[in-house]
Length: 250
Image (tube, rainbow, N blue to C red; front, side, top):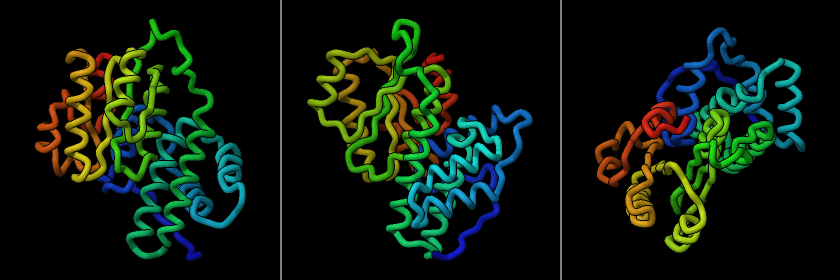
C-alpha cells in the first residue's frame, strides 16, 4: 500500500463522501475546543494507515495509540474520525487507494466509533427527562459513518437517539405507534435522495399529525438548500447546534 500522508486542515468545506455529520461535528468541535490542542497530523495519518491497511485488529491498535497520546474518546469521535474519513476520500479521488480499501477503511472507522461511544448512556436515561430524536438514513444511502457521528454528538449532549436505516412506510408506522420522539433528523448525501426524503417528511408529518419537527442535513445542503427546503422539512442545516437549539432538545 502506498504511504498516504496528509497535513491536517481545519475548517474546510466538505464534499459528499461522508455527509452531514462530519461538518456538523466539526462545528461542535470548533466551538468547544477552548484550549484543546489541534489535531495531531501523525495520529490522523496513523488512523488512515491502519484503517485502510491489512493489519488484523487495526482499530485496537489505533485505540492504543490514542490512549498513549491521552486523546479523549470524544475527540477521537468528533475530530480524528472525521479527519481520517476526509483524508480517505481525498486519497481515493487521487487514485492512491482502491475502492476496496475505502470500503474497509470506512467500516473500520465505524467500528472505532462504536468502541469509543460505549460511555455515552443517554439512550438508557429516563425518557421523561431526556429529549429523544429519530435519526433516519433514507433508502439508497450507501454511507452511514456521518450519521453515526451525528448520533454520538447528540448522545454526548444527553439526547437519546434511535437510528433507522432505509425505513419503509410500514417500518415508520410501527415505530411511531409505540414510541415518542421530540424530533426527526434526516441525512441526505445526494440529489437522488431528495425525493425519497420529501416522502419521509410527509409520512412523519402524517403519522404524528404534524406534531414532530423534522430537520434535513447532508452533503448537498450548501448546493441544494432550496430543493431541500421544498421537502417540507422544518429546518435545513448542517449545524447540529442549530438543530438542538431550534428544536429545544437540550
